[in-house]
Length: 88
Image (cartoon, rainbow, N blue to C red):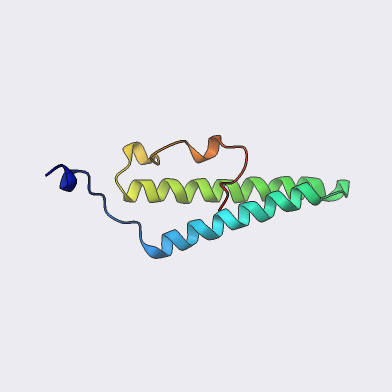
């Protein structure tokens, strides 16, 4: 019966797709930040990178809540604590 006790509901496919897109957007924003050389665009690149990161973290926490994670936190390390987006 232990198998049944550990069962968690699946995360909806549309949320999984949103998380994947958010991860790709975060990677793209990070790459843009790494490539920016114009001082006038650095602030924008930082803003875009932080916004993309926060969206990814939000969606990961939403998925964890749907799966019944403790206090809405994902299983494993906090995505906000990483310095770079998870690699594919």
